[in-house]
Image 1 (spheres, rainbow, N blue to C red):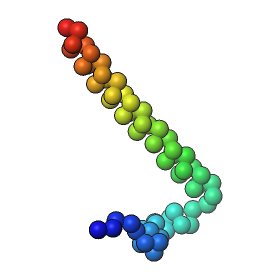
Image 2: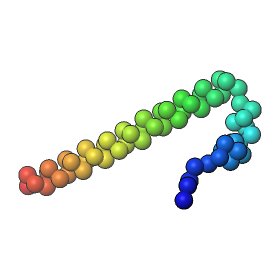
Image 3: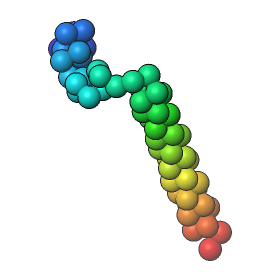
Length: 61
């Protein structure tokens, strides 16, 4: 089964407020998305570090 959206389905899913947004609004939204991605990556890295530390700490005990 194919999960790809058609262009029409994608366009229909875009809120009208986003379609009517100014370039500045779009740039601000893009910046928020980029920072959110960085935050998620940082959170994943932190979880890996904590897991590694916990594992190593348990082995040293």
